[in-house]
Length: 166
Image (cartoon, rainbow, N blue to C red; front, top):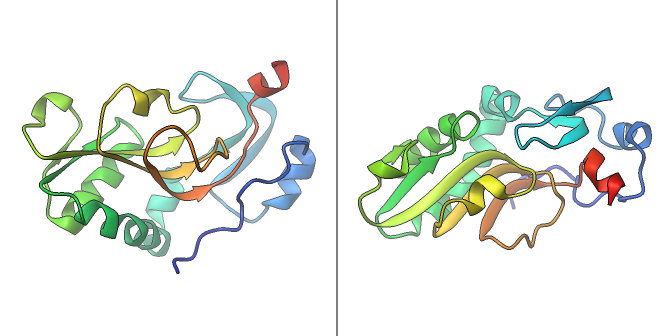
């Protein structure tokens, strides 16, 4: 069993200050008193920085160890990195399984398309590309059963400001 942080599904009723105390000590999750705008365009008090996970050789190895057996099981995989956060992860995974990779769908010729991103918030960037499988470092929407075949190293619920408006 791979070491995965015990973060799955904290209570949706937690307010930011209470939630901060429940996951303190993880340098790659930061709480901001004022909401920040995420790459998805949504807003949250919580920011996941997967570059800090990638920068830690031990954590990077654990994430890639999680993904490798699944990615290697596909016939002729092509690894597509979602620009910015997914690119270094895609390159590292491709090197691990000796597969071609890139950041543009136009470079994909044949085989099984596997898409890599760093953080899944709503799934919009992944849904834009039809692939055999999707890999994310952190699924922050808390739903391990999102309507895509996603393999996430960590799944947790980090509330969006928009969640409170619904």
